[in-house]
Length: 149
Image 1 (cartoon, helix red, strand yellow):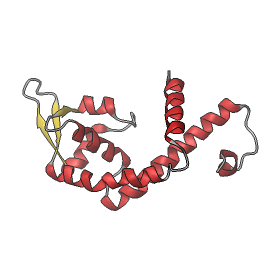
Image 2 (image 1 turned 180 degrees about the vertical axis):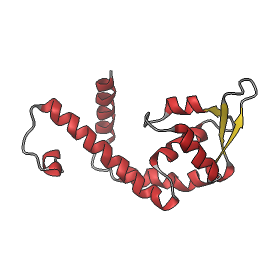
Image 3 (image 1 turned 90 degrees about the horizontal axis):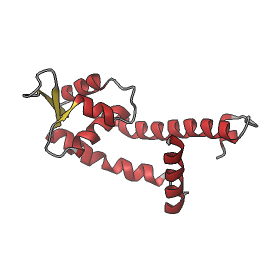
């Protein structure tokens, strides 16, 4: 569906303004789609993002700062997100032995098991993108990367 129809706006100042609004609307659409699939598991998009970052570390620990740098939503309160994941038993936190001011975070077996169960989300969300080809997805990725400079 065209952005004009989605937000009931007949025209835009120019194509750049339309692009900005379309990108914000589409980003929110994807975020809402992911949130819908995570809700039954009691996870937010940001918590899911942290768990995926932790899983990417394998058996290694990662600092809170490193997680923060890799977050999609840079405004997230990473310490609070980690607290909630630790309370759910999905992550652990230990004091770094070289720098006692730093905490090292690691995903638990329970967290890995949950992510494995949630991997189906990627397949379900990818199905929502079935109306664009691999070549179109590559082109869109290149354009978005170019936009961010």
